[in-house]
Length: 341
Image (tube, rainbow, N blue to C red; front, side, top):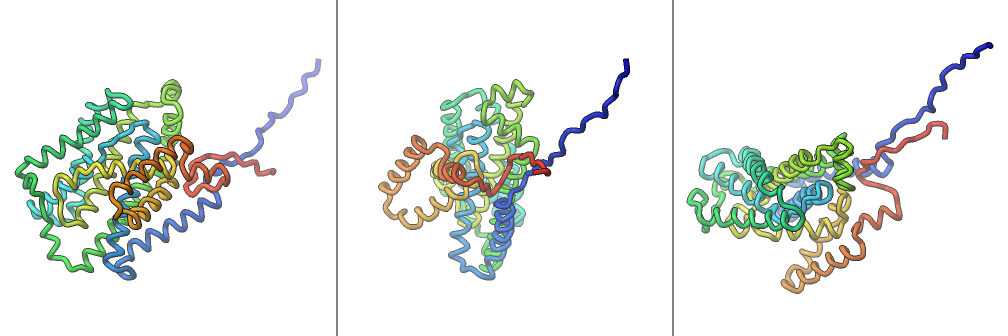
């Protein structure tokens, strides 16, 4: 019998596409936006810079909450604890210890990073709503401690008088660069993480943590790392925000409004997406500027909007857009492309 050997059949050549035309356009606009942010002192007024800074803080805090709830499955209502801790650390380093305030911004991030480690090991045993309540209790404990701690002037709060040695233009330059850096770290860092191999694990954990764990994903470790990273991101937003305010006290430092804002932004824009955070932040920022004067009525309307979206459009505005047009701004999917087609 004659055996006819056959050459091995090579599999068809395919390439993996990770970028899209819409993503390239969005990336170009993002770079231009960061440059415009850093250059604000040369084209924008002080009032505009302060408004943009607040918007950037909304985006940063919302994206950190989005990572926690949208990927790690940790629904926190107490991220203001890390904002206040970093804000107070900034004031102590700069005003009490005499460290350069712009250097103190980065040193202050050590405080939420250090605090997040024992807090996570305390809270991770809680599940679902109990975890959420636990994070709120932690934030309230932080507020009570700050209200009775002489180092931070107790309930009277602190002022960042050291900033008076810098001119208004120098402060605007610093605030503008910090805004650009904050978005680069929170949004850019999140995008980089989601496109890495850890991003695949996060997406799997988001969809089904039990199934992800059965496939070798270390769910506990990933949740811990995301919790610490979100604490540092919120701490950066808190340090930048209170440096611009030049004043901090316990009620403002640990204001639960920040958690409410983050939840509203992510729920309205679309949980589990960076695009949704940007859309939700713009909606809240515009609504706050136009209708914030109506007080309680304004908050009731925002609450009803969040409830309606949660009931009838769980993927948010971006989810509805992406169902109609497949044009992601920050693509994280891997698509196989056959070059012969």
